[in-house]
Length: 178
Ligand code: ATP
Ligand code: MG
Image 1: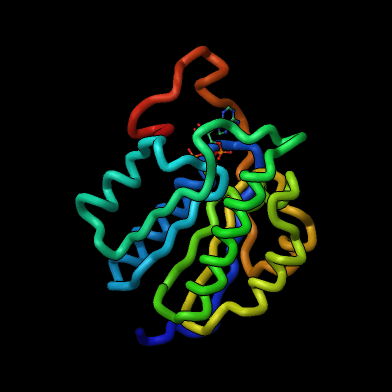
Image 2: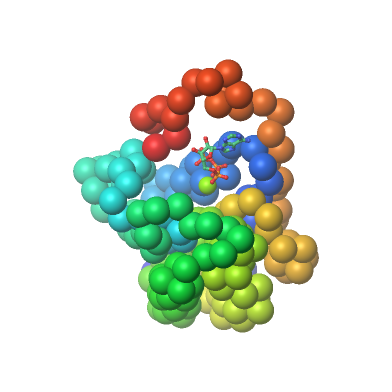
């Protein structure tokens, strides 16, 4: 695949809604230009149905979405060993993808949360960033992005909650939350 100049490392963090969907927006842009996208979801289970996964399967052969978590929510203060194993496997997959040069964009969705609760270390992610091949951009999402990762990134956007419809008791909705 033809290179696309210097690789960019982009971070979407903060407590407001829109980080994962921003990364999906980037994915759509890349696909429009004929580039392949690998979207790795940390701490999300294969069983949960998300609109983006259905869209990828039905309409977007250039988008590969993989879930690398258990079905249950991870207890951020005391994760299970299996949570760590799955996150480590996802990281390995990311390293291989970055070295392959096969993708225009690799997204590590919720990896900032995985770092924050110790499933992967910030040093491991730094090592990954040092291996990004020219032509592959990288996007990291999730609350609590560590400062030193933000320092290394080329672009950081912090999504701040002003309000969220959950506050009004409106439940998670198809096409909006999943
Ligand atoms: P989205 O996937 O909609 O782009 P996100 O990636 O920014 O959201 P996460 O921190 O990954 O948000 O949280 C995932 C879920 O939590 C989403 O379904 C979202 O609606 C919900 N959520 C996000 N921000 C808030 C908030 N400030 N208050 C309550 N719920 C939130
Ligand atoms: Mg998210």
